Length: 270
Image (cartoon, rainbow, N blue to C red; front, side):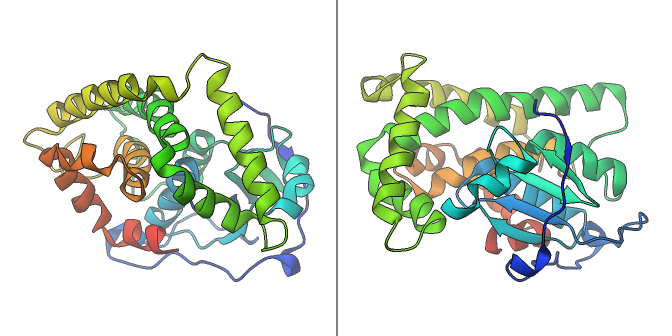
C-alpha cells in the first residue's frame, strides 16, 4: 500500500462541498472534532472511490470532492505517488487507498460502526472486503474495460469527467490504452470475456449463498463488507453485464436494499 503523505491543498481551487446528509442513526454527528475541511480526490466511475464516498456518508462526515481531471495529475501525485484515487486529505495528511480510508474513518468517527468489534465478525468482514477489492474488482473491471459493448459508455463516463472537450479525445485514447495494458500484462484480453463472465456468475452465486436469509452480509445492519461488495457490483448496472446481476434475485434485492439506505443513496447521487 502507498505511504501516507502530509501535503497542503488550496481549498479555493476546489469545487463546492458535498456534505453528508444527516439521516437517522447512520448520520449521527461524530464525536471526533475535525477542524479542517476534508477533501476526497476521486472519480465518479471508480468503485473504490464510491466505496470511500459511501463510508464518508455513512459516518456523517462532510467532505469536498476533488475530481481527478487531466490537469490535476501532478497535484494528485504529490499526495499519492502511485497517482491513484481515492485519496482522502484531512488536516494536512493524505490517506490513499479505500481500505485505509475506511479504517481511518472508523478510528476517527466510530459511530456508526462499519467494522464489527467481535473477532469472528471482524475477520469475516475483512475477508469479504478483500475478496471484493481483489477478486470481484478484477472480474468486474476486466469486463467493463474489455467488452466492446461497454467501450463507448466507459470512455464517456471516465474521459468525460477527466477532461474538457478539447482534451477528451486524447484522454480517451490514454485511458483505454492503459486499461488494455493493465489486463494484458496478466494475459487477459477480449478473448477471455466468456471465461470472465463464468467466473463472475460463480462469484455472484457465492454472494447469494452468503446473503441467504439475511438483509445484509453480517445480519441486520450494513458493514464494510457490504460497502466494498456493493461498490463493485453497483457500477455494473451502467454496463452490459447488468443482466448477470438481474439473473441472481437475492443479490439484486440486496443491491436495491442497500441503495435505499439514505446515506448510500446520497453517495450515489453525489
